[in-house]
Length: 197
Image (cartoon, rainbow, N blue to C red; front, side, top):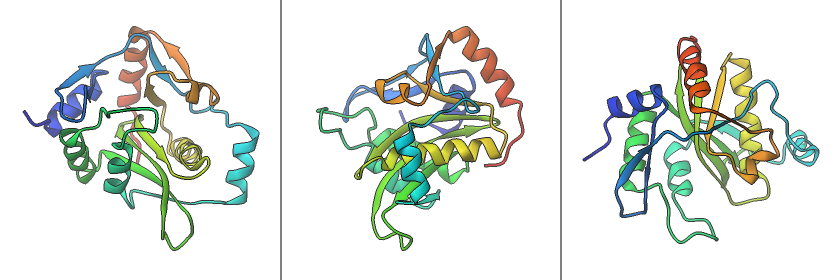
């Protein structure tokens, strides 16, 4: 069964998101406890990354290559044999992007956008952004996208940056785990916030 826009919006509004168990497998819905979030105002980037961002090594855009970003995110990492982003997931989020509720941040090798070297995508509802996945083909390219994203969310008054699960990769940015109950309370407040992407 295809994932409809209504299913996705309802799911995210209730703290639930879909993942496939493999490229050709079934899709299940998840609501982790604890839930990982990145505090937007307390977000911290390592100094080496701050220097890289400051040098402007990559050129960043938003929503210029959503399909390229999600397709790249769907490729298994070098340490993985499979992916949780299958064709059904890709098609559903492309539709959500076309409806203005899913967004991407891109890192390009230059201002001519000749080579996409990193990116991330996620879902935006009210004052909440739900990070889904990121990829990198050059040093720190996806991390630079995350720095760009957080600055974007700050400027527009977003209240919640959901990363779903805590990882070693996210620990360097100050990710915290909160209970599902606490997350749902924060989500309810964030969804009432009026923001513009």
